[in-house]
Length: 370
Image 1 (cartoon, helix red, strand yellow):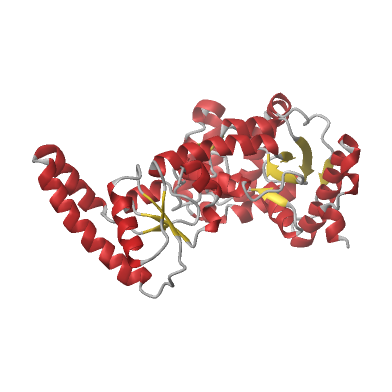
Image 2 (cartoon, helix red, strand yellow):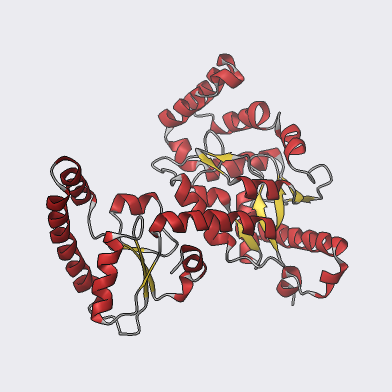
């Protein structure tokens, strides 16, 4: 099957089988794919070395031995109890020897197997093209607000009341600032991040708004796809506000794991010396060393996060200056739910004012309120 068609039909298959090595799979794979490697990383390196340094024929014999053994193990482990109606989609790097061998054996058993033409490389190209197209078809409603206002928590509450939500920071496994990577966490590859974004976009109804947090072009080390970023910057904006003392309390709760790792926190702050000056960073580090985390949090909000916020948002998000404001009453669950309902109502009003023809469509807010 052509890769573009296979991509659109992923959910119609009983399973999506990626037969590449574990390291290739970890770097990126299609949503929901299972890894049945016909060569593990060491075996793939062994066969590649034989092919390049000894003789292709010798490499093919060794590869065939390993692949046949591994396919037999996968069938025993995963396919022994599967019914004849099981219909897998199978791919490798280019749709050649590895996936072809797996597909041949599964087909000989009696399964209806579909092999992707061009393999992962073609699927990747099709996914990037589809991600760009889908980005342009969606109505993004951007949640703005200073650091610590609870934008990520609001997205969770919006999802709970039935709204469509794209949480880019969750997909990127990073909160988006110099302190945003949780201790012990690593971000996914750029490719896997884009695959995760695409997997969310394809589930959205283009006739309903998609709520997303205002982001810069990069989240940690990852780049937000250009087409998506541009569409977000042209979207509606809603500003979330929260009193400074509550922002401090929320940040201390959300960053509790990082706060507990003082050496790591001090190390990350050192990267801000060039931007904020040695004296300021040393003041923050001293507050942390003394255990004054609330004072440090209030200070870094005042002198680092807040100063450039309004200018940056006005420069990059078309509708920011005219954005309606939703003020949070607290940082408990009920306060965020109330704010979510207000955001949905404001979003509905924006849509109706732009397109009266949509007024007859039941919105999320109407659904929530019966």
